[in-house]
Length: 384
Ligand code: TRP
Image 1 (cartoon, rainbow, N blue to C red):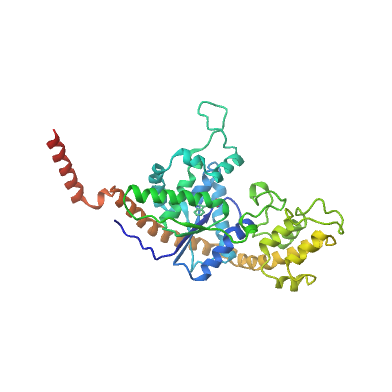
Image 2 (image 1 turned 180 degrees about the vertical axis):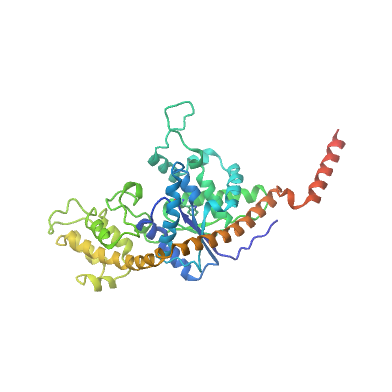
């Protein structure tokens, strides 16, 4: 059996470079990554700019993906990812990921892939409906898109990640990764692959941040986002236009906090109660503020102004960092290059172990390849 080093704690996570990162990405995953990075509890932190995965639904627009590679990396760096502690790398430049994907394809069925709830809802959103081979009118389901969870399993296992900090929507991907890793180890009688755990945010409002309009998810395609790179004026405009409670017409009316984006965002973004003392001393904490709103007598404008203060406290330092890195894009490129070079080495080592476990590492050992053939030949003669 090939041994694995069980003592190491390794993080792998990533994003598709299809657009600037927004607050949903930030509270759902990015903020946590920065905390984990600074905790000192991990031996290795890898962040993958998943451009191959981005191409599975943007094959006709590689320029968009290309442009967003630097953009997303800028978002990482400005949010506090430290290139001395974390390794940022580009998926398409890591050949081992492609090879592993191909072997893992044999370990999943199309039926199992069809049950992935995240892929199902993404298919609907993209119009990749209909998988009827006899119906010419259907757009159909691109095989690359359908199988991207397999490639994501390769991303995670190639780094031997133990931990995947990600949003709730990534749970089916990590589950599928665990299944593939388990099958691989069982079928090839080895201990090469690690079954990872997902780490989702503790606060439920952070797990799936709704959009400004109250729709289920903040998402670029729904146009309901606040981006990490938005300037102060834009953030203000967006906060002021947020969906609150349509039944709360006059200030004196009782209001609802459930489904009210101002309160959902306060749940997600309030750092601690001291922010009340700083910006809204009428209340000691969020419970008191909610109570007043529900009773009636607290206006939306006052709530929004407070939320804006809370958000700006978080966004200001990110903007300052972004301005610094933006002035040195060459450095950002170099960080990606160094991170990718490192990732190529690490993942090639895993690929070698996998090939060895499958005994398809033909050119590693000529003598045993020749000896095996001779033994096999002898056997077939003795059978005859
Ligand atoms: N699927 C993730 C997303 O849509 C991106 C991603 C690709 C990823 N590979 C990964 C996330 C590996 C975690 C681990 O954002």
